[in-house]
Length: 366
Ligand code: 13P
Ligand code: 13P
Ligand code: MG
Ligand code: MG
Image 1 (cartoon, rainbow, N blue to C red):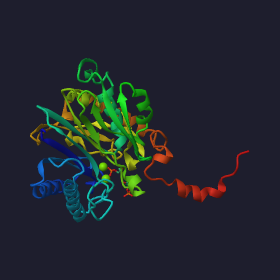
Image 2: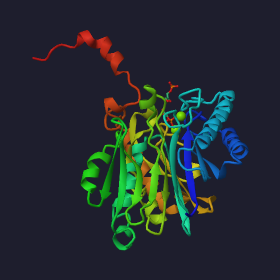
Image 3: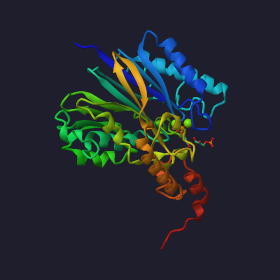
Image 4: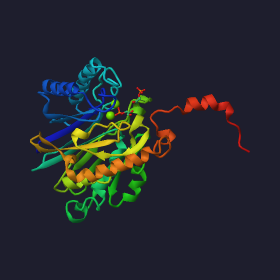
């Protein structure tokens, strides 16, 4: 049996600098230092990335998914970063860590997790996509475009290894159920669900021809777990590319037409997901607009050769311009939907209080 490699991305917001706009350099140093020191016997390689105020720990190892030691390493890294965030009095220090005690797996404890295990191919290009100021369902549209839309991915039409399509595992984050759709034959059924990204999220995608995992995403919803507002979930995902999977350029192409996602200011507004270079992943206008970054790596015996900052390319200037135009327009709507999210999707609201105060002023309509 060929040896397998596991790529694990665990992410959290443990304190913003300034406000919710970015991560303080001392937290990045602390994360690197902790992974290097504590992970030396556990990890093959690691890379610490940030998008807005979120820290993503990108790790490779041989321990498979859901490995308690790897999850504990990530948890302890975030605790160490939280201590620095508290020392600097950063905004929302420790905001995503919902518990004080680690229990074997970070799932359900606040941090987002995306991980996959596979046999490394002759060449193994992967892209780690990371977003800030939005929710896990934000990946539905680009994942659909990468793996099911022939207008984005010409490989679906002309690559014999892609032509029979892909399987999508979709999670219902509210009903706690999952379902697998085979595409293209079930595309219309699947779109009924994934077109509602606040509830249904694509967790993973598998190649029918290769029988292999191609993509996986973080799908936790912090507010559903905590029962209160603690920021948006700011999801990440790993996409394997080439040789029967979308080409690197096909995976990136899915971001060329910025789509609207829920999040932005106070997690309660719609905004365009802007693909940006790492240095521009600092959402400021109205705490946004929401950002996506893409780090490309070639895996080499589990080592992360890279990263390349894939959205730094000039060919995404137009997408950024469109995102800024959409942002300008939708901000003009102010507190009106669809600028503001519908009442039941806002991360926090004054509605119950205002309703209570005005309760006896409401009269029956004849
Ligand atoms: P404040 O209550 O600190 O103004 O927070 C607003 C906000 O940024 C929500 O995360
Ligand atoms: P984060 O989820 O990135 O912490 O942002 C929260 C927020 O309220 C921004 O306005
Ligand atoms: Mg934050
Ligand atoms: Mg964030």
